[in-house]
Image (cartoon, rainbow over all chains, first blue to last red; front, side, top):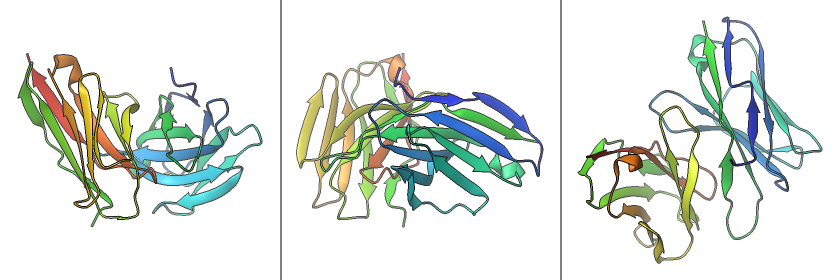
Amino acid sequence: ETGVTQSPTHLIKTRGQQVTLRCSSQSGHNTVSWYQQALGQGPQFIFQYYREEENGRGNFPPRFSGLQFPNYSSELNVNALELDDSALYLCASSLVTTANTEAFFGQGTRLTVV
Amino acid sequence: QKEVEQNSGPLSVPEGAIASLNCTYSDRGSQSFFWYRQYSGKSPELIMFIYSNGDKEDGRFTAQLNKASQYVSLLIRDSQPSDSATYLCVSRALTFGSGTRLQVQP
């Protein structure tokens, strides 16, 4: 158990719909990162939030947006879903230090767009 | 060039052998690296991190970092079938390689 929980675990949506995925960070962690992992690929960085502010973004269109709340939990929102958005979405929480940044992952949300 | 590169594999080794997983990186400013293991359908789990040149050992696992050559590796001694998974190399910036799939043959 990493202390990072994601909900829901599985989700089926129709093309064009909107979806919200949720993540509760590990206690004491101030940073959350979201990743998209297609089958057979490594996780692709979507964006990161640090103390409620976006702190970096990968090569994803604006229809991927996020929020981090004062309790450091987070949401990933995807608008106008496309078939290629079908993937495992991973949330990772971490405590950024000067030495290293270990990230602990939730179990992921499997999104299927039909 | 990707920031972190790994051979996708599969790397197949017999049970009891040493598995050697390799990773190269492009950002000379990267100071520390992490190895994650991911079983099929599961989320990645942290195995080791390394931030100094040289070797770091933890049980059957040894991580090696060579900053001059921009090279990171993970050695698994006495490989077990339960080690069969995808191994992901990650830089401090939380940039993932695409992973190497390891198969340990009983």
